[in-house]
Amino acid sequence: MTSYQPLLPHSSNLPGQGPYGRKLSVRNKISLCFGQALSFVVSSLCLFLVVGWALLASIPALIRGFRKEREVFEWDNHARYRKEKNTCDVTYYAREAGFDIVNEEVETEDGFLLRVHRVVNPRHEQNDNARYPVLILHGLFQSSGAFVTSEERSIAFWLSEHGGYQVFLGNTRGIFGMGHTTFSRSDPRFWDWTIRELAMYDLPALVNHVCDVTGYSKIAFIGHSQGNGLAFLSLSKGLRPDLGNKLSLFVALAPAVYAGPLTRGFPFTSLCHLGWRGWKWVFGTFNQFRKILKNPESDPWFDFILAGVLDFIPLMRYAYNWVPARPFAFVGYVMFAYLFSWTDAHWLKRRKTKVFRFTPTPVSSASIFWFCGANGFAQRQCIMDTSLPQWFNPTQFPPLAVYYGGEDYLVDADSLLKRLENKEQVRLIRVTKLECEHCDFYLAANAVEWCFAPLVEDIEKTRTDILQENDVIQERSLVKPGVGSA
Image 1: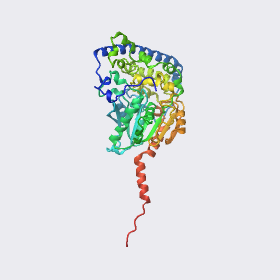
Image 2: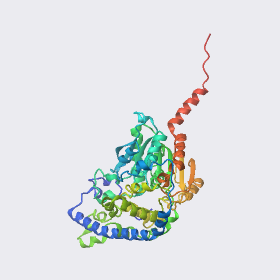
Image 3: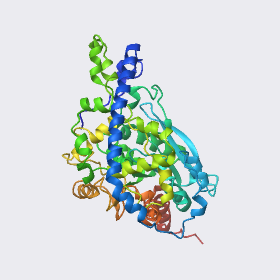
């Protein structure tokens, strides 16, 4: 689908068995460090240019935003939360809202360790496993922290309190400092993945974990943007369609299957001209550094060492740690609003800094190439092969609910709905179009009124334990009582 394919961990390339598991030699470590330093400088310059351009382009919008009066909501307890800390600790926000978070760890089949945040509601009975489980997964450059920054009206807490569910917040690989069973985070092999690996390994691991710890054979799944894009990919034929047997419901918020019109403008139109070789020059190690070393062909691992498979623009990670929260949030917001056209127009102003305590999160350079590079998502306009007659197995695909925004220009939900109607035999239980932007489904001040209540309706009418209980009751009502003998 693109000119880059990760080095898959098949049996002949397991750690300690061939190039995939070889320890780096001193020569390779030196070349890696030198190349990473050079690419760090080049990628940082690119970031400065984008941020500078975004700041200039956003001046009119920022002026209008300062002049605009924010809507006041009767339910908003501003006095309670205005002094809340800006932190990257999800547990802090949970406790401020009257909940708690338990950190859980999941291992994928290819050795990555994932962080899962389990919401604890002190108002629930101690036997919380009796409550129906819901797994929520974040989008690109985000994390589970996105679902806890709206105080008690956060989607994670609201579904726990008002839906009565066990809520699990999943994270894909590399987030919250999570590592690997074999590779360190500084090892380029740690960053050798794209959305295909997230679909193949991460999502199944998260779903299996929730099923295992709760004892439920099926759970409800809610994915936002990339979180549902990788689910669509995972459920497709030839990948992990069997995963659908463990989902009672699939909710797609801002479905990221088809690219929206935003991806047909700058900078996506420039990035799509970069092949993998050119991408490595800007966002990875310098492949040409091989020329100063002797006999590179003698080392079968050498090509991969210089492949540039690292986290995307690491300066963002350092800026997150060094720059104070408010300035970082201001610059981060301007950049993301410019690149992805999602703004704070519908948010509570005080929540914005909290949101950018969890945005952006580390992403592999190879993954961004999959989205933006030559023959990537932005150029092909779809994460799937549109020439295929059918993507999904109708007997395994779970009931689907789609929520999309009329002001969302990053993804194209209409094309997905057309494809589902004409070629895919899936059970579509809800299609809701809201006049909102890409992240407003959980960040907007009115997100509760817009979509949280319908989410509960969707979960309730598809949850398997309720359906099974109703079937038993129905069967019993059809059985006539026996006639006793005199």
